[in-house]
Image (cartoon, rainbow, N blue to C red; front, side, top):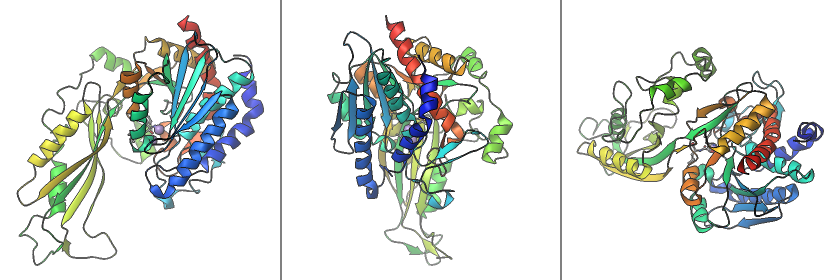
Length: 462
Ligand code: BES
Ligand code: MN
Ligand code: MN
């Protein structure tokens, strides 16, 4: 690629400033207090795509937040790359744990980012990573090096389940037709150990409500004589794992593939230092399913986690009370072949079944999606691997990721194309967490690597 590295060097300040401007918009999709900001953000993306050289950009209204679509078709006989990303971000809470305000981006050096990292909500997930693609396009268009057609589809509801996108994709198969989908919304192992995400876990997210008596009760007058919903809920949740940390829901593992020993050994070659892992999290031991390594537990194995639990009195001081209701939000990460709607059913059936007499259980499914796998012999993977090798000087390691981008499995089903996950973030970027950041080096390396993917993918398609 002629002079991408020098282009980045010359434009570095501008590339960082433009991203900073986008990070100032608090496009939190989960909280309706930010709805105008989310809409403003879609306008900003439209402008960015136009300025980068898309011929046609539209804001597609949906029942939820808009989807920004843009394209540049150079020649219909050439391959088409569809870039997906999201412009919405997670809520910044808890605010008091941020060292600088979440929507006032600042660049600071850290141990892992000697060239600086940009601190702001959404810097890594996904504004920074999505914007790398916009700037890579800008470079290719400006220098006459765009080798194929490109379509952009940037949504604003990823962090809340991509409901509108599901409909949009199903209704716009032709418009979205492509040869490969390209996403940067995952991570890599380390700056000197580039990796490509070859798998994403599926997800089933449910909320449970346990109701005991019809009103809050004095815990002395009634305590001991009626079911306490919080006691019951925590006992029910505790029973969902056995002593080996296997999940106890009947049928939960029925469709889980046991990976061949050879593949597990291949995975185990990825660099991993347990001591550093523990140190980074200030924990004295890791914890998880018996019989699997840490990297297996967080990628190829399904899980069940409580994400939030509440009920009763949590204000200052003490209040003696038996609450009428207790609640929890529970996520299950799923692996290939597990069907998320089936798992939601199994969970609901089991959870109702283990509830003792004296309480009522209500289960509300939130959202979910299927897991995804990218075979490493696919030309999309091959082209990406060659691109990393060119800019990092070392071939990438294939790595199954533990997170979920549910829409990727839907792309495969509806658009019949595979997705290449070229993530440039690090696990330590603190996505969804206070002090989220994205390495300046990672951001610029992404912009440098992406155009090579375009070139190699187009060449390999001939
Ligand atoms: N970008 C993440 C997913 C991710 C991060 C995958 C790092 C692999 C490595 C995405 O924005 C996300 O947060 N997804 C949600 C699911 C969604 C339905 C809310 C998740 O994984 O919790
Ligand atoms: Mn994301
Ligand atoms: Mn996210």
